[in-house]
Length: 170
Image (cartoon, rainbow, N blue to C red; front, side, top):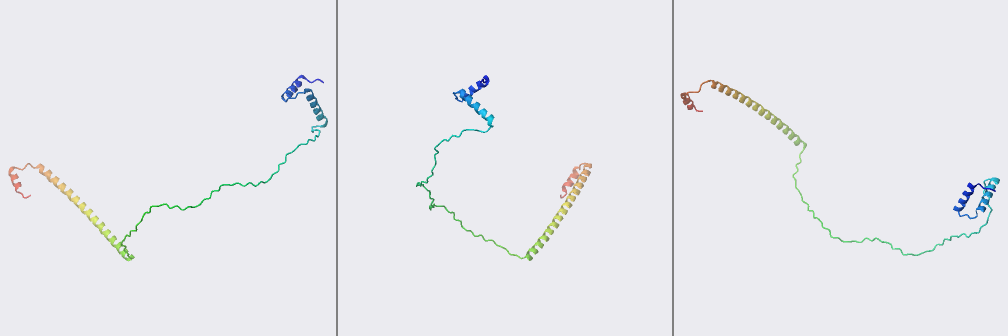
């Protein structure tokens, strides 16, 4: 039987990669397998080979091992530590507390109201008096400026007039 060169080269490369030494035997085995698949279908037909193997069985045994494990025990120990204390002295403060009844509070409220009214009246009087003073001052200023203006129109007094003026009391 003749095998095309391309297929034969591929088979040789496959055998070389997989370390198969007998190439003809490999080709024959594959032809049988392919024919059986074609003849019987794609089901695996293998010869049953009974192989005896020894399977190791694990046996679990409990062995009690006694070990000493250190355990921490927390104990409370009283330790005396000196602490500085602040001494707080009590100081008594005496205050005079006046107890009044509502009647006295109301009377004082009325008195305060009356005094506030009087203060307001006095303030109004002061304002009126200030206004009157301002008016009087303005009038005096006007009168003095008028009299000065009149005096400017008069000639200076003569020496005789001056002597008479010096005798006046003001």
